[in-house]
Length: 366
Image 1 (cartoon, one colour):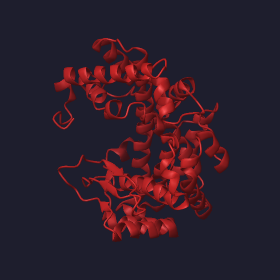
Image 2: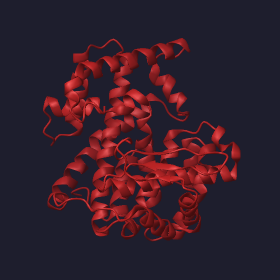
Image 3: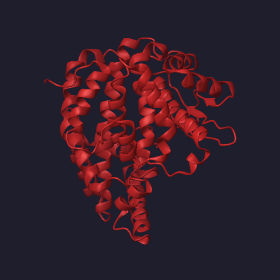
Image 4: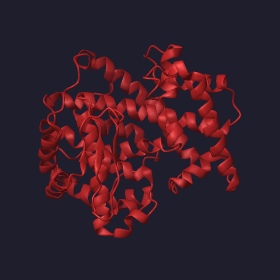
């Protein structure tokens, strides 16, 4: 990936050989353990006990059929504003201190703990991948250090907020029950915390961004494009593991077809699509993981839509949710904390309305 420098088509043969190897090894592993294919095996590996391939594919199809047209409307409606450039973040340490203070006592105190114990590696470095965020709890310290590699652009602020959401969740869960880290929690619920930490910025962007009134526009653009891309990639991954012996050309044609359906207004030449295909790093490194962002976005938006009017009660739910997240399946968590099951009929339509409530921006012609 580093050698390609974005020009993935230069290494198309090498990337495709790697993809074939990954798919073959994963398929052999699944068959060894008695599963039909890697789709079934990996879904259970990620603790997806409440739903399977059929429900996942149905949700991804709805994203393709319903969210893609809304994104088209959004981009046309706000075309002029989107061309003017995204807002820049303020000083990240000071901005996050101010943002977490606005959120609530626990969040503010935890950010200060991270800062005071040197548990933040958020300075730019050529040896870290750009716009990448990571965190992992260290049990001896009871903290989850955060690593990011800011590049001075719009992504720096919300990426750091996202990783803070993960770090804060692990900290609260570990304090509530030290065995929390031994639970094999579903990524589909773990990502709710990080997405909520991003969404609360729609109210507090002035703490972290120099031009806060433009934050909602550009973050919503990232949100829509990401949920569309993750759903598309999930559909492609499922196809891959049902067609283990597909030729390189068949893989490309399948991906190109999905890309055209999910990016109807894009200039979809072969170079563009090859760059997208081989930039799908998690398909190689964390296969079947990225679906988690689809239901997590839906659940997080439903919770966050009331934050502007009921900030204290929504923040309290956020804190309680973080403490309990590791101990429940997706359906149990939804029932306990009163949000909808993303796999129910009609939820994607409601999700679009929730986004409009959350951001104050228009997403449809209705």
